[in-house]
Length: 203
Image 1 (cartoon, one colour):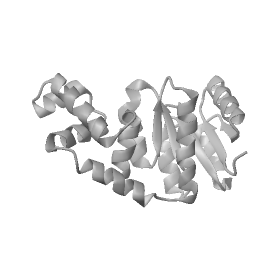
Image 2 (cartoon, rainbow, N blue to C red):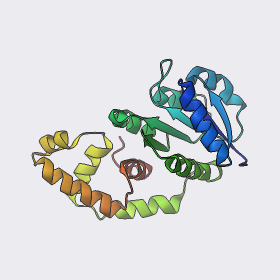
Image 3 (cartoon, rainbow, N blue to C red):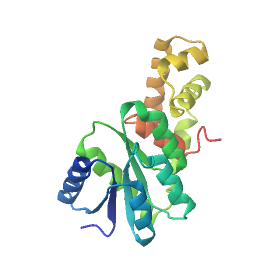
Image 4 (cartoon, one colour):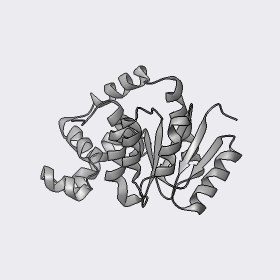
């Protein structure tokens, strides 16, 4: 068992039970919370924990939950689970402090990998070497590729990016593929995570 606990916050009981079972079978200590509000009440008691929260919940969104934790000076690595159409909102969550977002449907391995990455932040607040490496990759991007990356980090669709930059959607796809390659990004969440960690596009 790990020396930290994964706290699952989701209003859907089947999801909570499924995630809790999977993570327990993978050797994690787990505690489930049926609402963001109940988790916030419990949060001050947590010593070493990682938050795994759904983005859309009836009482409070994952973004609001992460912000409230920050307001209460409760430092906890957070991962958000999101539907495909919620990517802009998920990016907003990362800007609010979340470390990662995982799109539904997802493989169990993606959750485990995200938790492992988050656990590094329990002992290492910031991995300076990794940020330096990401910055070096950003420096290889052309002006147009940086414009496309900025739009992607903002959660814009290819057609919108094409319109804004006055280029074809196909050209956007080419630039986006080049950005993924140069940044060595495994997925959209990975690309966004690297960009935000390096402070790219932040205002």
